[in-house]
Image 1 (cartoon, chains in turn orange, blue):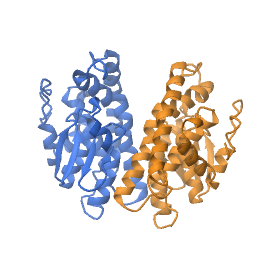
Image 2 (cartoon, rainbow over the protein chains, first blue to last red):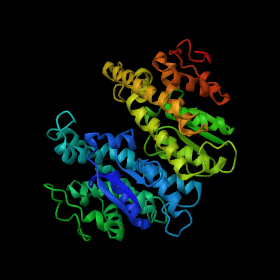
Image 3 (cartoon, chains in turn yellow, cyan):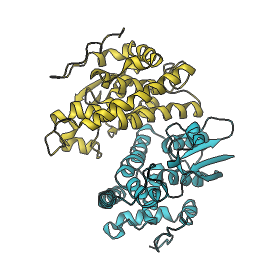
Image 4 (cartoon, each protein chain N blue to C red):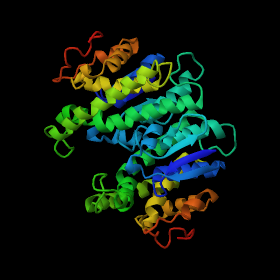
Length: 229
Length: 229
């Protein structure tokens, strides 16, 4: 049995949940308050970050991209529903966009917004808690615009973000967007093509569990779980 | 013929140069002043970052990890000198440590030190230039200590960072350390085991071209190219 240490609104964890759901892999989800830096978490992942995938009898697999590659290598390499294409050049494009969202978008948009609006509520002052930094919120809400435009541009030239099939790139992008959509921070009127792409990913069965997430004290915006938003 | 857009002291570029050298792949090195955000660079890599690997007839491969995976898939998959192990679990450990150095170490140590001491010299004020931020330098020089201790701890339990063979993990770590060693910012007296590990990587033939780098106006510290430092 697999266990995923995660947080419901952590975009990097959401990416792994989508992969698990797409591949039909069952895993127990355990919420990790990573800002508390539990000793047990640090033993599994010295970096102290989530997500971490724990499988019986093997070392823990920490880090969203590392987990994605691991699941592809252990589960889907020969199956039809693989989320990585076959050729090295196509795989490079998927990885480029995976990194775009898991690094760049996370750094510029989803990381600051989720940290300021959700994680900091639970942190003590020593852990970095306190009221949201309004400059960070403003920057995140501003930065998302050019990312939406980039998504819109990509899907105007291709069926899916990285090519003609859905891939890790789409799941990574949708995972990050879903976390800030929960908070109402996605300006959907900005880019029709990006919105239509998100509607396609959002309507997949693998997305349902994410749309059912509810954080105590922080309800989602009205349209969050609406497939016709 | 391959072309690598790089900067001699960019640690992420140095990692790719080491891989190319280990695999015996010839590539033309072209210095990229990425802070100028040349339009040609943005066309090859919309993120505007280096390194970028350009191969005739295929889309550009941007990003140090993406390039590493691409080179492994196209060059070394069946060879004896591969830098990724064979099993998914071992590969996950290599990727975890690759990310440790290319993300975490870069964020906490090598990125700030190289940016403040080298890149900012060439940048205009609009590009972010100016005198080095002493707080950033102090933080980087302080953070490296626990990374050296971590390297020392890893190689006290294994032959190489990620297991019993040299891998991408060692090359990534050594690439970052070499860039700040050029600047004299590695406190080698802190950890004997880490120093011995670095001496082993540094003495490889693949390392020679990096040790021959000289930046105009910024000479390396005396011991930089010395194999017995």
